[in-house]
Image (cartoon, rainbow, N blue to C red; front, side, top):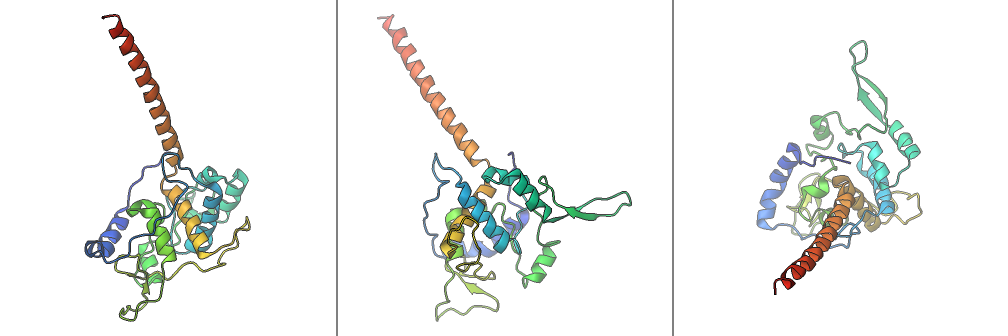
Length: 255
């Protein structure tokens, strides 16, 4: 799937306003290092974990955070069947139109549709969350340095605020977030979802799974890119070997 990856102006503004000063001061805890199946030259997407991660996104995150750069049909890349995708898409209402009367209307989703935003616009989103704007998660792993580890650490890092820290109204303490205080409450709790494959839904497991899913969402072409890179390296190695043999034979005839 070809997709232009770019960070929206809203995302850039959010990152600059909320994180720049804190980053400069180092006022946050470095992300924990996790072994991810997608890391390295031979890294791949764990489809079963990504499917579980999608379930976490749909049941926990989707009420506040969009996924506007992913179409329903793209879920085939992580193992969803055509029938499952059609059934899932049909559960969403998509704004379409205009119709013959010139009016916009809503219809059940189709596999070719993209995930709709949970809010009509940014103002509605901010009004619902006391001024805070829940970011679209399509590129969240790419929007932050060391994104996968950061996201996992953030989701699992909520702790009570130290005695010497005073939080503002509606703020929550998390040492992995720049400034250590954010408006989003801890989104995960043990047993929050019932995994279809029977996996125990601990906070750690859900955080790992949704991070794997969002890594795929941010870079769905990753496996294809890595496979192409390996093929190119193999070709260069073989080509170098042939060139070396040709070089030796050429110079041996000149002695």
